[in-house]
Amino acid sequence: MGDRSAQLLDAGLELVATEGLGGLTHDAVDALAQVPAGSTEQWFPTREALVQGVTQRCIERELQMATGPGPDIEASPEGIAGAFGHFVLRALGEDRAVTLARYALHAEAARTPALREFYAVGADTADTWALDLVRRAGAPHPERDYGIMANYVTGLVFHELALPTPEFDPADRLRVLIDALGWSGP
Amino acid sequence: MADRRTVLLDAAVEIVGTHGMRGLTHRAVDASAGVPAGSTSNCFRTREALILGIVERFIVRERAMVTGPHDGVDLSPDGVATALGRFVHLAVGPDRAVTLARYAILVETAQNTGLRESMAWGADQVDTWALGLITGAGSQHPERDLGVLANYVTGLVLHELALPSADLDARARIRALIDTLGWVTPQLP
Image (cartoon, rainbow over all chains, first blue to last red; front, side, top):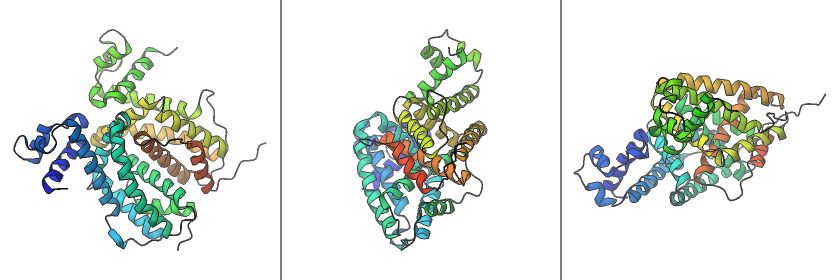
């Protein structure tokens, strides 16, 4: 994705996060991204194109948040708890806008089937990566356990966003869950 | 027969679920509930009072989604899996508006910390009730297991809303999760 279009879509994502989808207009993106009026419309001629662009950007950034630590993630219960915990902290902290935008877009996808296709592709990419890691870390039922962990992490971020726990330690929570799932380690 | 207050709050939940928090005004609730203009303002003086009313209404409706029409949950792993499975199917199906409204309000809470107090109160009510339930059903680590189950169910609903599975069996998935948590089935007297 080009730098300029990514810049516009990041601004669009901020708007969706703070004002909901109703706040996402071409003019508002131009203003927030501090680009000449009309720029966003040149890149994304319709509102539909703009919503789809922001959705794709949101998925791209989530994938960056998940794989952030990169190939250095150790395929062990400890390593995965750390990596997923890192994702949770980013989702609540520096990438909070991605999280908030995602809820608005998810709600939109619930009403607009066309947006679901984007999520299906994004979910596949993230799932393939994470499932491989979970398998190598010694999960006895990798598909089941990854399904449990993915939903758990989503719920955890959602609850913590609205009602933060003091001294929240997501890696520790993930470790407790992994222990309950009975992993032996590689 | 639902009282006036409940009628207004259900209309408000429907509005937030369909149009988001931006759609929530006293007048919109009057119109949607089919009551005379000013009725909602009389019952809920401020926007905060209206939102607090919605949070209270959620607690009742979400609990009813778990317990089902007979207002009961069988105190066993199967009973809890059945109850939470029913909740998931209602949350992504017939009670979708409740779910979408809940997300809208949680997002609003994330942005407007003034709402946290009432949300925290609501969460406490639900947690206390749910802790009793899973303890009775055989959980050996109720606090841990409630956290696991609550986050799992929330995540499942969120994913299924955006990306529905062809033939979701939420009850079976939740049963599989409970099996990993090592509950001890209570002996019947």
